Length: 200
Image 1: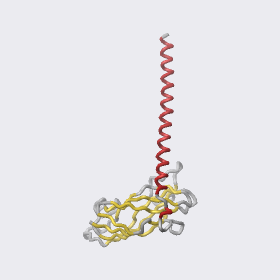
Image 2 (image 1 turned 135 degrees about the vertical axis):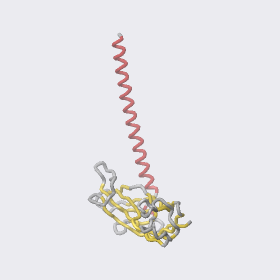
Image 3 (image 1 turned 60 degrees about the vertical axis):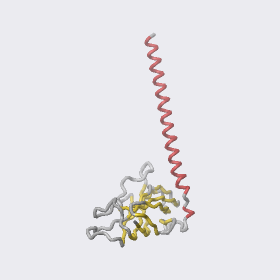
Image 4 (image 1 turned 180 degrees about the horizontal axis):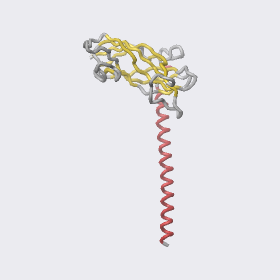
């Protein structure tokens, strides 16, 4: 009798565990789908058709509000950038400022001019499609700025910068790469100029 009771208890425990695992797996799938859909809907909320210049295969990287921005030193400004994928398959795209010139008065010891930082999520774009990057231009030096200026407030002045988009082949599970070094899977895709006025 005792054996039968303990066996029934063992079976009911296994059944409860199986049901719990199924519910947890279903919950995870639901939450993941919910956030994936939310990300897609959020990017659709800002349509490229609202841009004065539409991104296309001739001009794949464009700004929504012109190419001149103002940002307070140490602060951030939100901008919208349109990106068009003219590749034959889906690609992941990442944007960054690659070089800047400035009239700001840095010390002579600063031999490599700091450049403003820009932050935006990596975007996956289907072929022949255009999306909107919602980005922050920061009034501080990017992490790749030299001469010990990285992460510090930019000095007031005008910065003429080249914004570059890199395109990467998606990995086997359709995700962007972790390494964005230019090579077989990553290339410089497009670039455009921007003027950033930094003020105090």
